[in-house]
Length: 251
Image 1 (cartoon, one colour):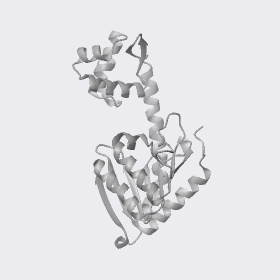
Image 2 (cartoon, one colour):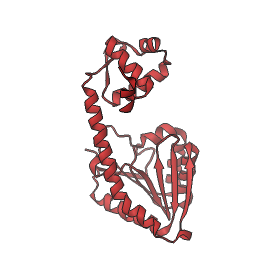
Image 3 (cartoon, rainbow, N blue to C red):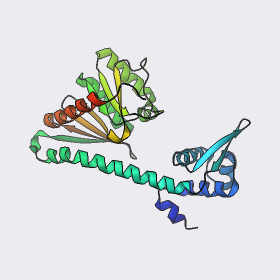
Image 4 (cartoon, helix red, strand yellow):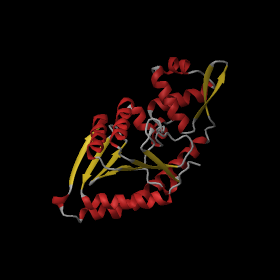
């Protein structure tokens, strides 16, 4: 088999090794996968999780042990279809964003300040800026689980500061099963509302004061901060429109 064909649809080399092994071997444990592929077990679990998300692998318990096996090869076709649908949604999001982005180019250059921050420390800087601004923050397009995973200790400190200064945080996120939300006990000043995924722009955006921050969860995570009153007001108005039509319940 041409491994490049599987690479072309988005599978990594280690994902391919594991997937082909499971097709040939049936149900085996992560330990056996590690032994037969030479991939560290911690990496095996990571790749298995990715393959499960792609619908190419599933698991069963036999006693206390978890066994993994490949789904029907025809699932690859469904995976490709899902990627096409996701790309169409992204294209729609881009089309919606283009007028606002193009409008930015018409604003006086001296009134716009742009800064780029990379890595977890950049995210911390942004969140500290929110506290310093002492203004309500409007957030769209994020599963809070990313922040919980990448900044577990810092996020507790962040919410403590929001509570201390009475800073309100409103979040619009996707309406879907299992999405991570910070509990009210941890984030008492945060309010969530939900939109159907087809209505939803998945770009993670913060608006506070005269600032707009756009976060890209690539590697490394990157935050682009735009400081301009007109741009911030445009994003704020758009958020308020979405807030009105968003549901208060994730169901």
